[in-house]
Structures are given as C-alpha cells and as structure tokens.
Image (cartoon, rainbow, N blue to C red; front, side, top):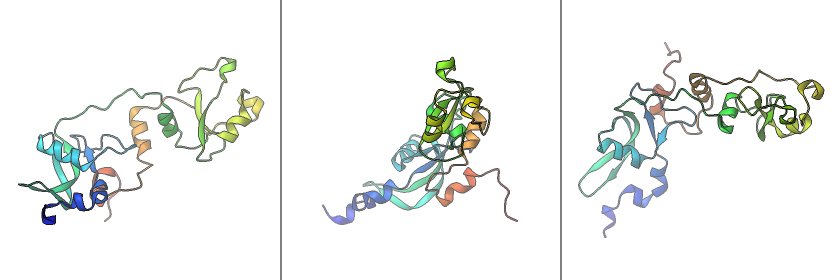
Length: 194
C-alpha cells in the first residue's frame, strides 16, 4: 500500500493518543472535574457520527478514512442532559478529594491512607463523619488512641460532602494537560480579564 494513504495516526500513533476530547453536559459544564470528563478522540468522533454530541472545538489535526477527512474534536457537548448524581459514594478517592489530598493531622501531602477518628476498637464507625485522610506517620502515631490521648487535632471536622461541594473541590486539582480550547468551559465562573 502506498504511504500517502496512511493516516497520521498510522505514522504517529502516539500523537493522536494525546488528543482527548473534553466532554460537556448539555448545560456546557464538564460531566466531572476530578477526574476531568475526557473521551479518547475515537469516542468523540463516534458520538458525533451517531448524533449524540455537537462538536464545539477541534484540534489542528485530522483523521482520514477512504472517503472522509475529519478534524479531531477537542470539546464536545452532549445533546441530552445527564442529571448529576446527588449521592456521593463513600470511596477512598472521594474521601481524599474531600480532604484535599492532605493529612488532616499534619497537613502533609502524599503517602496518604485513612484513619478512624474514633478508633474502630472503641466503637468508631467507617463513615464520612469518622474517617479522615492521614499520612502514614500520623496514622501510626495515633494508632487506636483517641485524639486527646494521642495529643493530636484535626484540621477540620469530618462530614459528608455535598455533590456540588465535591465537584467544586475537584476543580482545584486540574490534570497535567489542559488544552487551550477547554479553558472557557472549565473556568466559566472566574472573573474575566478587562
């Protein structure tokens, strides 16, 4: 087969793998901020072909079939609104997100685990109101003691977050890559430059 018929994807597969599409709900807000709602470019093109999304912005590259050349979408918006979930699942990830990925005893980041404020040995439950993010040294130091006996204090009282609160918390942790075409949709409520 002649090399002229190859697509850029065939010649440089890693290049198009780096072209995710930001997925917006029908209200033009991302479905999620953390993790940011992204689709591989192939899914974005398929959804556009099936008339499930509108393409709002595109990258400066194209993909080709024998009969069609298509610019790769960088932002797509769903045609049907997806109602956000109101109930927040109690997961390790959501707990760390609530606590802004930092130890609630010393404020350090990295090497996080979770700790029961009232130890399970003392009847403490595994719930939003009793579990916090903790670094390994603080978790070991506290052990199965109460906060008073361990002479430790919390940065903030643990509680169950609301879905909007957790979604907004995720906006504080952008991914490593943000394409310029996404900015108007990620930070729609920030003050505009004059």
